[in-house]
Image 1: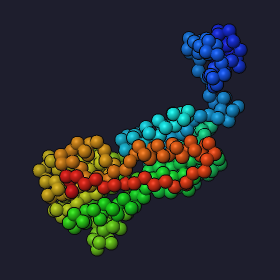
Image 2 (image 1 turned 135 degrees about the horizontal axis):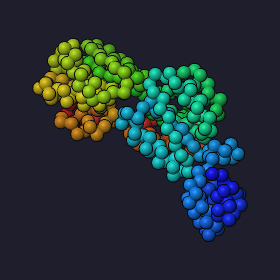
Image 3 (image 1 turned 30 degrees about the horizontal axis):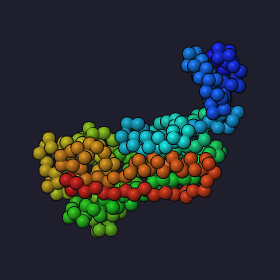
Image 4 (image 1 turned 60 degrees about the vertical axis):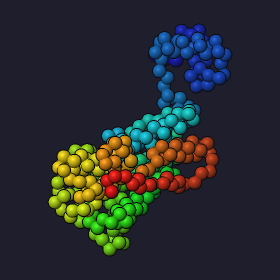
Length: 325
């Protein structure tokens, strides 16, 4: 189906069809209705890539996330998409994984679609991928991580500082024996190092840690409880890299009759609904994912409009004290 076929069916020129799809305000209401009726009747799908090449405007933003299995990113991506949609942009999602193996190929493929901007969740790991982004000459905003050399804009927070804050919180609550249950993705490991550093500044050490490949699951959290109890003295505290792992620990503790927080204190990360629904409710680190997504989208829209904006914007991370600590 070609644009000329739609034009013939509507009794107008191909240019008029193009205007109906790209600049409808230039046509009368009657002509616009006639063209759009023909488009719908014939099932015509415009070649957006060809339009982008001729106009240099694709109205497309690419968002690259590690996974869609984690609910932690969903709130942020929804807010990001909503703001860009209101500004007339469409968001295309790419899954980059956690290990960076296919990162360069994915970025090269998506850049071939002529996006006007790009969102990164976390840092770009490969040198080749960073080079591709630099050559693309489009604004790149990074979220959920510390600064990336591939991004010229960043909206986020320090994962290391979050880990250190959790260590201080647990120490202030009187705990003196500590463990970690964490995925081994880069952002979780940054939180782990911050947690370890916070303990060291208090003259304390990490007694045990259990690392596992991302994405985290409830069942992995349940499986982690037995070795954790074996290696961690009673009345200890554990910091989990996600609320899913923490909720799994909490569920398994209930099955085994382990008192929370009497025999084991638990802190998660993400402030997911499942943590708020547990009994006792989960102490966790809350990051405003909606604000992060909205700020990232506004950064891209402003940069595409030629406005000068700050290169770094911070989103606060807050420890929410609940029943598990």
